[in-house]
Image (cartoon, rainbow, N blue to C red; front, side):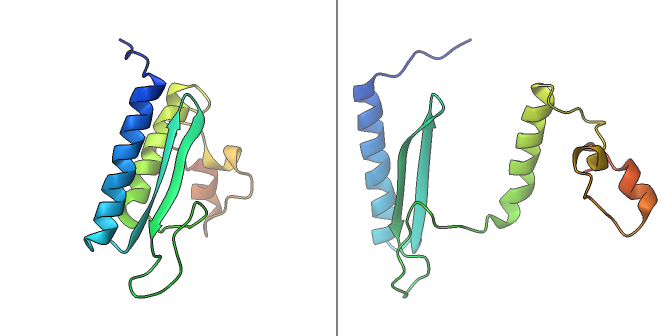
Length: 119
C-alpha cells in the first residue's frame, strides 16, 4: 500500500505549522532549543534550528549543531541495521570484522566471531 503523493501546497502548510510548533516550544521554555530536518523523496526540504544550544547561553542552534541522542542511539541504530538487512546489504549473520577489518575487541576470538545479530 502506498500513500498518496503530497502536494507542494500541503507540504508548505505542514512545514509552516511544524516551524510554528517548534518556535512555540522554545518560547514556552519546553526546551532551550531544537533542530528539525525533513526529508521528502530523498531531498532535504526543511532544515532549521530554533533557540539556543544551552539554556542561558547565547550560542544559537543551526543546521550544523550536533546533538547527543543518548538513549535513542540503540533503537535508531537497530532501525538502520534492520533496513540494511532488508535491503540485503548485510545479513544478521554478517561478521563485524568482515565489514570493518579495523574492528578489535580485547580478545581475538570474539573479535573474529561477533555478528550483527550479536550487537
